[in-house]
Amino acid sequence: MRLLLFDIDGTLVTTGEAGLIAFAETLERVFGAADDLSRVDFAGATDTGIIAQLFGLHGIEHTAENIGRFQEGYFPSLARLLPEREGRVLPGVPELLAALAGRDDVQVALLTGNFATGARLKLEYYGLWQHFPFGAFADDHADRNKLGPVAVTRAVQHVGRPFAVERDVWIIGDTPKDVACARAFGARVLAVATGRHGEESLRQHSPDVLRADLSDVDQVADILTRG
Image (cartoon, rainbow, N blue to C red; front, top):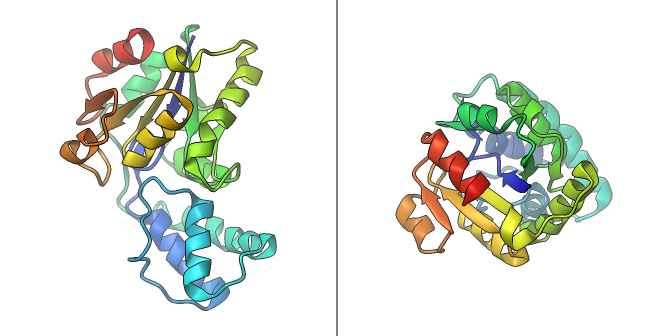
């Protein structure tokens, strides 16, 4: 059985920067700190890591209470902004997920820097949430490179069998951080140039497979399930 771990932003969907705007709104509304977020690299980062950066930049105490206050402001902002922004599902994604659905040799899940609630809000809005029964999220660790083993553990619990990571597990993502995450626990990685990083940028990080997008569904599915 193959375990296919999908990133969200730039891989499955683009939200028209709804998440970024919701972060800026929340920071200012809850903590009184205006920031255009230009000093923060969102691509491939975890939400917990981004919050830690913002708290550090603005001298906000990094406590569980303040993280909770941020989340309480962020999730409603994100839900409001998603229909206001010009986002979309990225090429080939619905068709690929449909092709993988129901196969008894594939388990699809998430590995994302989003909080679990943020992931649900985004994927429910774009009609994709039902494809992902579990995942690893920013709630689990601020370091994306620590999320792979979390996802594998949940996969074993979900399907009731082990996975040989080097052979059975793929990460599908759009940033160099997705490549680094896969390397951190021995998985393979299919990089897709549908986010902020183009093919040349991603090629420098030596993913196992590089695609412009996921629109060649048959070929991508074949690579992920038999490659």
